[in-house]
Length: 238
Image 1 (cartoon, one colour):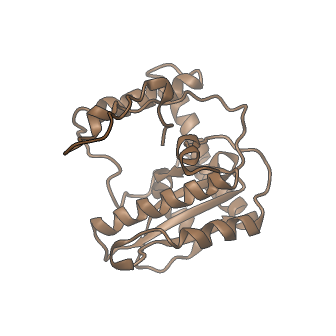
Image 2 (cartoon, rainbow, N blue to C red):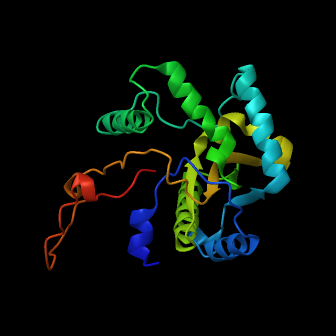
Image 3 (cartoon, one colour):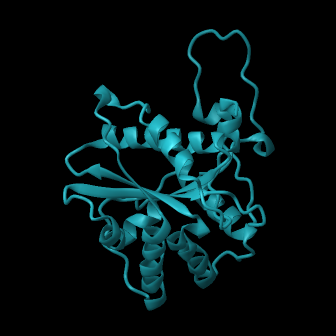
């Protein structure tokens, strides 16, 4: 798959079919992902790829917590600032509206929204999952390295005909994840990622991107003007 097509077709898929991902495909993807960039090549990612019985057990335990109404584990990092400023606040709000509208959930229907969100802890039905940890001793630049690594994984998955969904949501069930994975004490769970083959029947709305002029400044001469990306032609949601 062409790299541009991989970028454009990558999106957060929240519905997967019950089809096993071959182990050799996963090994190929994660072997190649090791070449993702990182500052001074320290490679701060600690990755667990989970399938089969261990993943089924994790889903089971997380599901029990959802049904029981157990409180979330205390946060080890802030997912979003408590007071998002413009334009980030509006972008997040627009995403939430589009996401839940696709599922037929009205604005303000908190109960239905929570039911939809609970699908996170079933990995949206995916047969494989990644869990990304980072040492608590590392700083913001190394967290940026995680982003580059995870993007590399997602694009490689597209090259294999697979889809994914990164999920910070797993950080609030981190103790349940640790029961299955037994990570070293010094590691912090950043996110999970569901991996599998897309269920094309799952409804979604293609989320737009901000105009290039709103996010990017070109300094110096350019041979030609960069075309405007219209909402209908934009990349897909995280």
